[in-house]
Length: 476
Image (cartoon, rainbow, N blue to C red; front, side, top):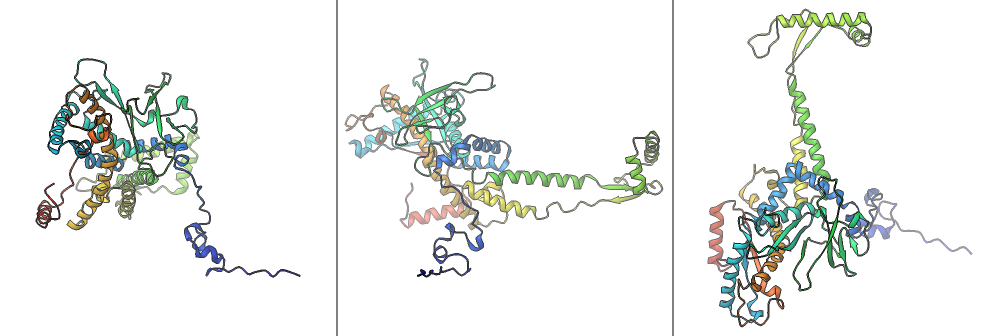
């Protein structure tokens, strides 16, 4: 006896099974099958990022060097996250440390004064290369994180005795972090980072600067921390999921559009130049057959002589009676010739609207507003400008907290340890814990960078006064 076949219930399109149609459409074939050929592999972040990691960062570098919008995006990160001075606001956890609030404030004032003297020294003693102050190092770190997705700083020790503090720092390019001898990745060594079985970084392989390229490349292994807990190599990036070893730059989601926008702009510029190049053309009476005889038969001596003679006659005629457009009149042309004035056509042809659309897409991917990226504030009201600035400000504050402040705090802790050991600053005597026992509590701090841009100073001051009078905020 034949088993009856149970009919399959279909969706409204008459093709997709009802079970598939009732589920999430993003996992199916889509309306009309548009998603049927879209089958990306399910990969971890490292599997998706590391195979083309070097090329992706090289493309981001090229964009920042040669693309005005990309360079502006990096400048926006530096100016809004850091600004011209990245100021320390030291706030030790005085309750946890068992000291009084006034003692903590006095200690903080002492620390802040000593730190500023060390960090912002015009001789750049904080930098191994003697090129950067502390604020400059933070600005470089923020830029490095933006177009490389991560930043590296090596804490070093100056062996000379000419300065009070021996702590120094070296900015390390992400390009120099790689596997020894450029070997492939393994479970415990990925893209130059040695990790344990839990995924925590143990150390980093740093190659020497290979420029000009003829020297053999050498790698040095630098531990993440020294045995006493002091940071030896600072690595800051924002992971998007577990198991991520290196950072992804912000240009990945918009890199293709930025490159195509470059090509589009160059093509548009060439088109405008070509259309504006010729103000007028002179058409001769030479028919097509005669022209082809001249061109195709130019290999024979007779044709070459005819062509040379004809061109010579034209040249002699116009040398005696030159055609000028800048004068008050145009002389008679050679018999049979006609002068045609060329009017430049509209070179825009919808280009501006298309460019704005691309720039809005790019701005969304980079976390900044369209107006900031394009530097175009036309046709904006106060409300739209304020909303746009507030959206970008929230993004920049997140980056300040998790990128710039993390780099700054780890650098500050390295210095504070030495300052305490050298008794440049003195811990309160009643403290419950030593520095080694409570590093984070003693080094707890905030970092103050550039302020939010004021769109209309008068309105924003009035708003602040109203908030204070209503008790919704304070003077801080």
